[in-house]
Length: 463
Image (cartoon, rainbow, N blue to C red; front, side):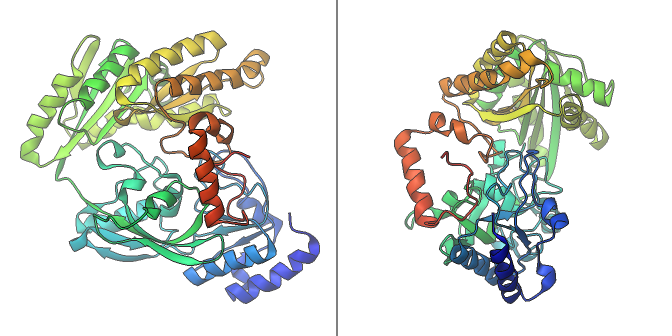
């Protein structure tokens, strides 16, 4: 934390840099607003700054390095792992005022944006041009593009169109030394040195502060079909996922919910949600004339032992009804288990059945309900441990239960996170998830970008 004398100096320097008293705050009421994110972790910063230009952002990094003050870049705080919580104090740089869409270039399938642009606002601006940006996390109405970049956000469409890392062409940024640089080009191909763009995506603000992004756009499909497949048990649904992803027609969404997830969503949203051992929501998109054959291929792959029903939506209203279960699940879980442990592990698609089976055994062994749902088409399963802290046995078993979940994931050649990132929540597991030599290389990369360790300290890499 910054001492009182330094705070007075900081106030003068921030005023000189930002030129407006409304562009920063040291008031506790405002600092507290930027102390937490969706992880429910909290740490109050010493100051909050609101840069509105690249030069402001660069000046903040230079100032923080000079004064040895931590700097935490922040989007809208929808992160679930504590990545935007300023655990070391210092300054939070909120990029909400850098929210301009600088250019939309349909001819080259790209858009240039500032970091604070909301995902949903970008999608709305792109739609009249016939394009979209692929990342579509649940928090899309509220999350920022730079936040998506920081955590390599995904969403249902990632199964076909890729996550954030696959849809960023170039970046403008400032490293921890205060030096501005550009990396990448507005081209779909490039083989010129190290790929710094892909390195920065997913780095959670620990390497550089992003001030501009050039994004790869995808044409909107002319049509779409949505199907719902229900199964007698989880194993049958997981096997169907593997079959669907092994045939040539790639769905644009393939969402999975287990029996407990369906039950909870049904309690929350009503009888429109079916009773079943598991459910898949499957979407295919493309030219209208080509969809019947695509749907037929998906139907064939989804059919098999344990299938109860395979239903195709007939209109937009029914599509919304089919998605109701998935959309009802998160609020239902928050209601019944506000302290749940939510992980977003990933395994190879062919190992999803083994993951689901193993999670059931872990749940029974520790007496902690585990609810699973998520983006099954790329093996990204959200694992929710619904433990009750007031239950001594469950509270005691929760750490070992979570550790066994990760052991299972690693044994299946999977990894810690598909789209939520590491933040504070998963740092301790990084040595188990990453080769020791690779982890040491990550530390050296961090030192090259940020030699004084001022950028989002305490995140991603373990102590």
